[in-house]
Length: 623
Image 1 (cartoon, rainbow, N blue to C red):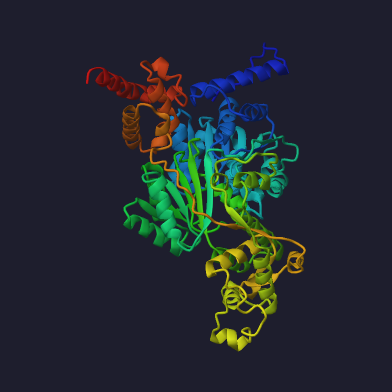
Image 2: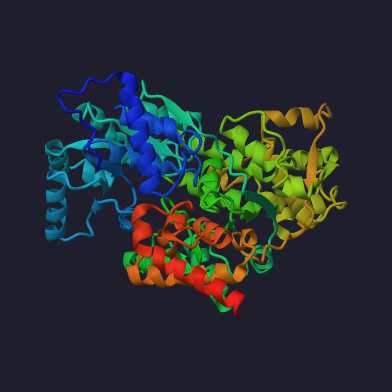
């Protein structure tokens, strides 16, 4: 830790103190983390915290949130305490910091009592730079008493959206973190998250006592991610086509709604030759941990998971996130897809879904035991997610507008921009569908209503007398799949409501009246096959002219990572290897100017990578 105290004879103005702090922060950025300059709001956030002030930080995944609290923790006196909701990932976060020469540790239930005492003694003696702790442990009387006896530089509350009771990752313990303001009023606090709409931001501010803190909102755009959403019953076949065409050897995540589907999909992918692992909350914790470590430390692993997996995953080279079901909300979708392409290289957010997803999610919501108000809010969030899926215009623009960012132009990097959907005047079809819902008493689901529209007489339909209603057989111009698309889009546009209390029977909303009266037209989308744009060459390798050297550097990294017992990206990110391959440094001094090569890593690994580069150049000169 850097000592920022002044000698008794030093007289310093506030401006000179700020200048000194900025210089110290930049020095840590350069020599510890190996980067030349701060990005976007990082410098202002770091300066705010070093000056002892609180802050709220919203920064997209991969935007450099960690540096915003790590650097102030190293510049200020004392230990920085990071509140993290995920015990399983603390080891990897600590390993990454230690690789950079930072004295980091964690306190959680995986430690023995002797190991915990050793870390506690290091904290009290001022030896620790950064300490990770889960909110449950932090809030215990014992830990609070321990922290009261230690010198603390700051509190960083990571994944701060967990404080929101309306959010997708709500953790009740997070709401109790308000006591940090009472117990440690002189210690600056920073709340950080990648995902928060205005309602969630308000909850973070209120519950974490950050009313007077400056807000740093870096924006939600992830321009390197391509968004693709389509609907079909053949989700598995579409997934395999996507993987084979665009990611035949890449690491990625496949999200499924149920544990059963997770296990079936992982087994299916493994049977087709991919290294696929399952992860869900119903598995033994030790198996989950093994699978997580394999995903983080090995190349090309596909994790098939429920939403129990992903928060806090720092793996930068996840090249795709695929959804085989509709997520619960736009916030969930953004959070989950944001795990792709953290390194800034091209990545895919791919989703396949069906109307059954909406029905299943509504049923799960209704059976959740949540308060009625929360159920209504979550139903609205689900409706917004369905609306994004059925959109005809740029998905990125709609996604950003959902989070309050206006004025963006069409991105040119989503399916709707690259392959604009064919639209058609669906007014008559909408009138027929809505009228069928009304004529059958608003008491039936989609399958039954389609049978009426197609004139498919069956025992149940005859028993109900619906073979005699005026809408029986009036929809034969469309097929079953087309009618499903019509009903799905009417749900997305708010003209119909699936009542979870009545087995998701479809009911009319007030918005449907102008359609039925012929006063309003309805434009619908007719999905077209997405044209695949093969990216079989890895996203990072695409930036390298000398792929032989690139592969040699990757092999060196894998060997060193295996020896150190850490994931390869902890040694160096792909972006650092790309720069090495392009610049081909010959000396330690030249290597030190490569982004991501700090002093500790230069000393620890520099000669190994320089040897690879020199041997490659020698072989190229004298093959």
